[in-house]
Length: 273
Ligand code: HPA
Image 1 (cartoon, rainbow, N blue to C red):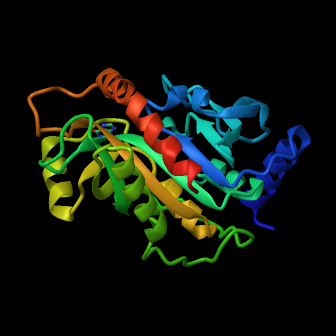
Image 2 (spheres, helix red, strand yellow; image 1 turned 180 degrees about the horizontal axis):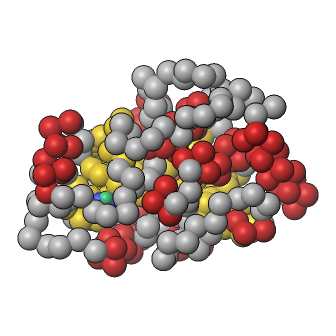
């Protein structure tokens, strides 16, 4: 058994000692979706700090806990607060929650975040369905001994974001009359925002939005055979694309302003999963 799997087993044993709930969808709540709990019929809450070996998030606005319950008829585990690489955890620790949710039973992972818009056609407050990603500027979460119990050494990443789930997001956004962009998400390590020169490079690379999470979680999920989808809220235009200086408070303020529609969209999508 790999060392990481042993840690995961301990986390999972703790989880099962608390509840027999089997979620089908995992939902990671990014900035602005922190108040999502009210959309769910929450049956159980598990603070990350109660789980032995679980990395506990420290970033402002990320109050860490699993919410277990139902969205419509769908059993869901939502993560209120995620773990970021820039907090000092290893990538393996950063994706531990995704792997634990796999062990809980999820088949689908729904990723949300706030990001900086690189595509000049985007506007602050837009939603972007993630169609593909660039994670080459951050270490792979699969570096190290392979967790063979979850997946293979060299997993394919041709279709990280599930084609059918993308279609579900498109049609649901249309039904709800919520405009949604589509594009490629690029993950940096953070915690500093990018320089304008870096953003110009990322634009040449084909990125439409930039953020400090998500892509590593998607890789770990695909490794474990989970179907993945994701939506980003463009909380600011990336460095050099507007006259504004960037701040975490502004990111949160925009994400909060857009949270009503974001919650509605995510809820309608999950109800149909
Ligand atoms: N850069 C990186 N991460 C982000 C940004 C950004 O501009 N906005 C929100 N998260």
